[in-house]
Amino acid sequence: MPPRDSVNALPFANSAEAGHSAKASQIEREVMELFEQFRDPVLRYALSFGISVHDAEEVIQEVFLSLFRHLQLRRSRKNLRGWIFRVAHNLALKQLYANQRSYKTTSDRTIAEEPFDPTPNPEEQMSSAQRRHRLLAVVHALPETDQGCLRLRAEGLPYREIAAVLGMSLGGVSISLTRSLARLIRADGR
Amino acid sequence: MPSKDIHLSDQEMLLAADGELSTDGAAQVHSHLAECWACRARMAEIEETIADFARAHRHTLDPQLPPIAGPRALLRAQLAELASEHDSNSWRRLLHFTSATRAAAFLCAAVLIATVVGGISVRRSTLRRANSIVAAFERGALPDRRLTPGATRSVAISDVCAVAHEEVVEEVSTPLRQEVFREYGIVNAHPDDYEVDYLIAPGLGGAEDIHNLWPEPYTSRTWNAHVKDALEERLHEMVCGGELDLSTAQRDIATDWIAAYKKYFHTDRPLALHSRLESIKSASALM
Image (cartoon, rainbow over all chains, first blue to last red):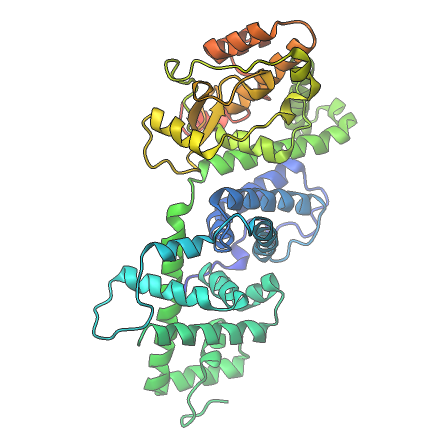
């Protein structure tokens, strides 16, 4: 399994449940620390929706500005990582719908650049690039929800957080990941 | 529940790996795994697959991730602004100047001074400001004058002043952008690495002409796009207020916009509000 961050490792996550005296400067510092920690994973997640880098960066800015407001309003500090991914998920989707006519998805482009045979061929010694393309092509063919589960898992989120981000039950996430992984293993010709 | 004879399901293995089984359930899974070679192999296969996917996922997306420095500076600047807006709502607190509010007070003072001196509009959308701050990174502060001397379109002052400066945003067409890149010898330009900017802003009668456009890399220096935006707004205000000829404004900004900034803001350095990124830039030794 990929390494995953302990929720307890979130800076300040547990420090001030009753942060009534939280000052803007303290919240700013806190948001910047969370940004350092999660910018790349959340940006990757936003990009995986197929929006442009520019749009994804804007989504991320909006996520962390919303986080600032969220903390300033003294809302729940429970599982801020899940909160960040959930807001990013919603904003990226919104952006995707807004752009849907003008953009072709990144993953489409990436995969389309290099033609390859998606059926496993045991005789062939696959290069790592070919394997990568094959895996991504299989993932790309999965239902949206299954893709979301896998991508969040790849960013190190445990099942419970994935369930919260995607609004699914724990069992639903588990079934989805089990199904997707079985498909990936089959496609890999193992 | 698993026994020696019944193999574990993939789902059981995944839940166990994620710590989502009850203590008893997890113990049974672990003892089964210890004894069952087939399930251990399956478990390894699952783990390897998800690790492979995570690697493939990153390998595909990581090259697209721009460096964090620009977005970090942008977020910091926007947060400072949000915080100062919040504090200015309760500005009475600033009169006390306690150590805790000193920083916020300084920001508010900077906002006030700059508003008076520069007539800066803070009405611009967050998005546009965001773009200009990001654009402030990795830029050549001045264009090559041989390639970009500046070009204007025939326009009446009444047209220029009919709309607020910040509302005049004109996207440069893709073929023209490509031409600008070719002219500056930039091959394989990634759209996110550069912003093609107007030397004389459209709001000051600047034309969408290759002689009025140059590619700005996304890095910041002291004299960045944010600062130039402030100058454009200042010039627009002066032209529309009858304090300055449009042609003088156009000439000054095209000749050397940094000198023009110094002249019209009576300063040798960008005002704090116009280049909040300065300290960050110095720290990252980009200057």
